[in-house]
Length: 238
Image (tube, rainbow, N blue to C red; front, side, top):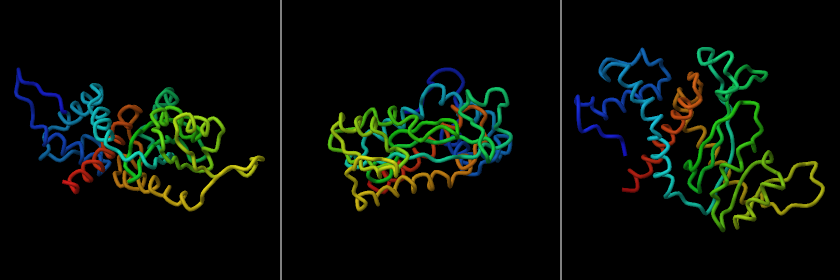
């Protein structure tokens, strides 16, 4: 699914470039610190940006996540600290950065399947409410799916959306909710898979701390870390 260039100057080997991009993803180092065995850092960076603009990683995510197990789906968020070199000053709000007590932060929104593998991803400022992008992430919810989420997603419109899709939302009710809600603590235990997903992608230092000024570049790294999880599962299955 990577773009091919049959004409003109022969392109640098894609495997070498991908290994260089994966090295930056795992180490969190600046592009200029890329080891020489991966070639010029400008080649890796330019191809990373070019593939992001062409939507290559988004297409890869869609292709891999198309085979997800929809029996159970879990939605949650995780806050990431923005490094001082990633701050855009006047453009923070446009680049999904928000100021909180701990400084500038961004929030990753994720929907994972029965096996804890990512299905859909999104990014907002750190102080945004957890359910800000719930409608977008749950728009493709399938019938007979069990939706698990924490108390932050206890909203009537989310339950109504799940019911409209033919799914059941197993969400713990807020303490101030007056009417009783059907909730199963036993089924809710499986929600830890979405927490494990965030832990796995945060093994990559480029995801655990946001160094990128552009939200699109940071989201591309999150997608790349997610793609690696899918590829590992496919390799073990084969």
